[in-house]
Each structure stands twice: as structure tokens, then as C-alpha cells.
Image (tube, rainbow, N blue to C red; front, top):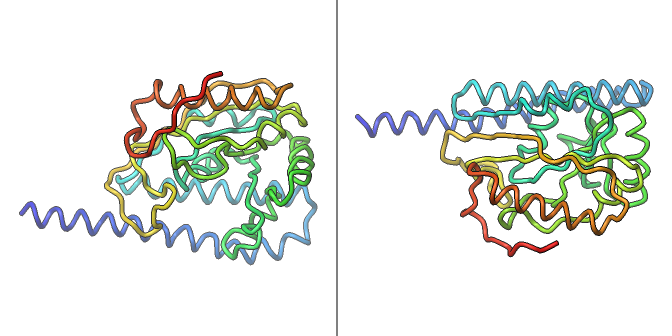
Length: 265
């Protein structure tokens, strides 16, 4: 009897995983031609608002479906505190591919820095261009685009690690977040993403089923004022994340990744 129950649960979890991915892919494919047609026809401001709203609602629907399955849970309520606030750079740690999905699902006026090739991706490109997401093709372009976007009181999502975490608790940070915060004089709001699974972490196959249920908790961390010294700021930011994720959280798979020695200030 136990074997039958285990088999049925396993089949159900595979269905949740694969049908969820199909749902997300279908939403992207349906929106892509619409966004492609709309892009040259509407003003930049209207296109940005519409593009970001559709992406937010799509991601929110996707996460709601995963939650209803009973195999995923998402505690994202603290993000709602940022919705009506003025321009911020949002700086989360990056344990999985779902990180951007979770943040964007709660914040409708948010821009992202994307790899340049993603703007030509069949699933993401047209929608990202309509939403005026920012390409990282050059530092100069990234700084100018971010400053222009802040004029609409938007938030900018930028992962300090630059890629998903491979070393516990975070990878070495890249300096672009400090440069943008310094040039635009915008505060940096840290965000701590905690999970009990390595699902969709770096190197995890999109179709590999993890142990379920999986839990995610997103909480607001320290807010840093716009830095005057970018190098000093990056050291402080790195130290903050390492200290907070190792000592402040029991909800993170700290033994699942190799550990880098902590740096001193």
C-alpha cells in the first residue's frame, strides 16, 4: 500500500513540475507575438507600464498555480511593502531561477538587467523589450538606461552575484550594482531569499524533479544609502549577505554548496 501511495505522489509531483513549466512557456509564447506587434505602436511610457504589468500578472498566476498544488509554498508578503516606494535598487541573493519570478510577481513597476542575448530569446525577448528591461551589453548603456528608468520611480532588480549561487552562502559580487547606485544616487534594498531546496540552482536540469514540498521565503534586509565609495560599498554589501545568510537564517541549505571563507571588512 505504501508503495502505491509513493508512486501516486511521485506521479503527481512530476505532473506539477512539467505542467507548470508548460504553463509558463505557453504564457510566454502567447505574449511574445502580441508584445512584438505592440512595441512599435505605443509610446515608450505606455509600453513599459503594459509590458511590466503583463509580466507581473503572468508570474503571479504561475506561482499561484504552484502554490495550489500543495508542493510549493511562497512567503512573499514582505515584498508588498516596497510596491509604493520610490526608486530603489533591489539586491537579492540568487539561489534559483525562480528568484526573479518571485520578485517580479509582487512588484509591477520593476526593471531588470538582462544578458544581452536574452532580448533576442523567443520566449522572453519581445516581452522584455516592451517592458524596457535593461541590457547589460555595455556598462555605459546599463548606467544610462538605469538612470532614465529611475525617472519613472521604478525599481531595478540586479543580482549582486551576477549569476546563480554556486558557493555558500553567496558568490563573489560584481561591481555594477555599486556603480549604478553611485551614479544614480539611488538606495540599495537588500533582499534575502531563503529556501530549503536546490531546485533550479546553478547546474540543475530544468526537468529534474526535486524532493517536494519546497518552501521559499523572501524577506527584506538592510537598506543601504547611495554609496560615495563604490569599492567600500561592495565590501560592506558582501559582508552583510555572508553574515546574514549564515548566521541569521536556518532556512537555507547551507551544507549543500561549497563554502568560501568569509572576507573581513
